[in-house]
Structures are given as structure tokens and as C-alpha cells.
Amino acid sequence: MVRVNYVRECRAFQAAAGERQITANEVVLWHALFELFNRKAEGDRWPDGFLPFSNAQLLALTPFGSGDSGTEILRRAREKLVKRGLIRYRPGQRRSRMPEYSLVYFCAEPLSATESAQQNRAGIDSGPAEATRKDGGKASGGSGGKAGGRSFDLPPNQSADRNPVHTPSDRETPVPRAAEASPGPPTAPQGYDLGWKTSARARGAVAQRLLDRYGGRLDTSDPWGDLCELMAQGLPPDVIERAMPTRPCFSGLVARLRALALCRSVVPRPPG
Image 1 (cartoon, one colour):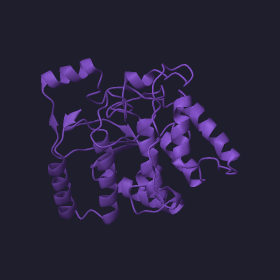
Image 2 (image 1 turned 90 degrees about the vertical axis):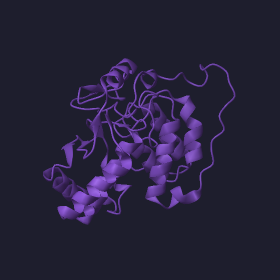
Image 3 (image 1 turned 30 degrees about the vertical axis):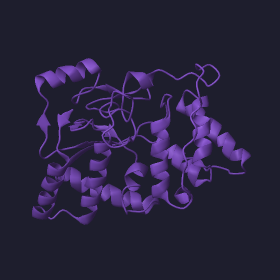
Image 4 (image 1 turned 90 degrees about the horizontal axis):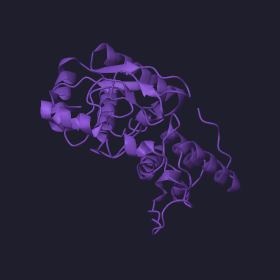
């Protein structure tokens, strides 16, 4: 982790964009990555290693569109940012590992020795060391699966240790099924507007909200994309949220949700 000032970093990038004639698509992609890294930050402490993001996550934050055309625009913009030295990139493997990105900050400051020691004691990955992902794999060279909390998207400035977006131990332990959990008042699902029915961006935001509320283990390569896909096929987010406490592993949850979709006469398309 390093110390990053949000406004100062944005201004430094804007100055560089003007001086180096960075294209509009590059600017959009940089800001999308900057937003995703901010979501995995803990206050002004930001991850300084590699984090995994799917193409769908990035496209949801850009006007590039979806499908092959949007992916091609994303690929070209990414290659240019890498050549300019503004980001680093590691290709993923289809259905097994997401692509990984690292931001090259303009104004980052290292943490003090005391802060670094506290971070290490808390189990937060502070640099490009190997980190354990949420899915049980390893991400070499970076905050990979931990730096921000979870291996996937989180709300801005969410702590990594709590679980999200790349977090450690407490999310590593599977949550018991509802029947085995200690008794307590059920949490009523929160309301969702109907934007998820028509907007990919709205589905992306709802999927992130659902992931933030999920208490189990994220043991699939792209849980965010799985939720978006199910909602695109018509499965309401409140139905998804009611099913979440019944499955301690995300793979089991997705299987359950697909069964629910079939029961509602919604036939999900296979991912990808």
C-alpha cells in the first residue's frame, strides 16, 4: 500500500494527458481503473500492486459499449497506456484467471515504517509481494487478491482487511448455511429500482452492491460478471439477495441462482 491523494493524482494525470496528447479513450480507461483502485483503497492508503479486473467491470465504467467492439476499444486503449508507462498489465486466462492491472501513480508516497509494520500485522499486502486471492489461488507481483480487500469490486475506500474488495482472513472462512448459522433476526433485502432491467451500468452497480453484502467465499473467477449475467436474463436482485445467506461458497450460490432462473422460465445463457 502507498499513500495517494485522490485530487492531486487526478490533476497530475490531467496535466500529463494535455502534455502528452493522450487520447480520449485512454483518458476514459485510466479513470475507470483509477475508480476501481479507489474502491479498494483504505482511506488514503491505496494498493500499489496488481489487482484483477474483468473486461466487463471496466466496460461498465466506460462508454465503449459491450461485446467485441467494446472489448477491442478497451484493448487498444490499454496497450497505449501500457506503452506510455501509465499502467502495467498482465493478461488473464479465459474462465480461470482475470486480467490484472497496476496503476503507476504520479504522486504516491510510501507509508512510514510504523504504518507498514501495522499493515503487515493486520495482514494487509503493502507491496508487490505474492498475495492469496479470494478464490484460493495466488497472484504474484502485487496486491493481487488482497490489496483492497477482495478480489473484486468494492465501494470506495473500503478496508481490505474487513473482507472486501480484496480482503483477507474473515472472508477466507466459509460462512455456515442458514440452517447452521446462529439464530438472529434476518436481514430484510434492500429495495432496488428497476434500472437493472434496462441498463448494463445499473446491473453492474447492483452486482457490486450484492457482492459487498455477500458473506461467503468468492471461489469463482468472475462473480461480478455472473451476477450481471443473471440479472440480464431477468432474475431480480432481491431474489438473488434472499438466496445469498443459504450458500457459503459463491459457486454454490450461482448454481442455486441459475436453478431459480430456470424455475422463473428464464434460461440463462452460458457466460462468455
